[in-house]
Length: 109
Image 1 (spheres, one colour):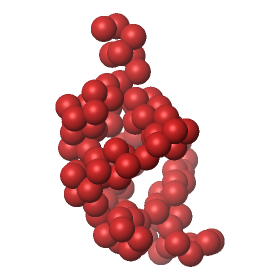
Image 2 (cartoon, one colour):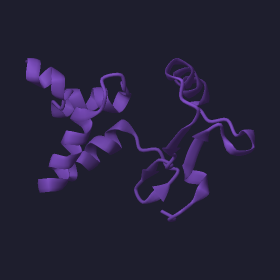
Image 3 (cartoon, one colour):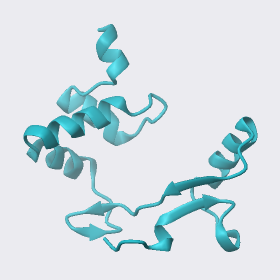
Image 4 (spheres, one colour):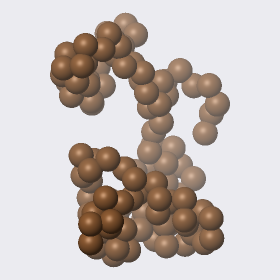
């Protein structure tokens, strides 16, 4: 990963009129909240040491299962604490295979 790469900083409005995959959703959020701008870390997917390679659900699960100790604990906490509105095939698979449900669901259960 290159440090300080401008291409990995996302913003709306985007420099030079750049459109992002999330532009419409973020613009709608800005309209609802009254925000003037949004800035985020736009890191590319990374898998098997290669930037831009999107891992499969099975790759991601195998990676998480390979973690031990504090690394695994932090990964589990990160996944469980992700907002409920973030529903991805990865999250569904982690819930099914690893039993890592949302923190609030775990507390209710």
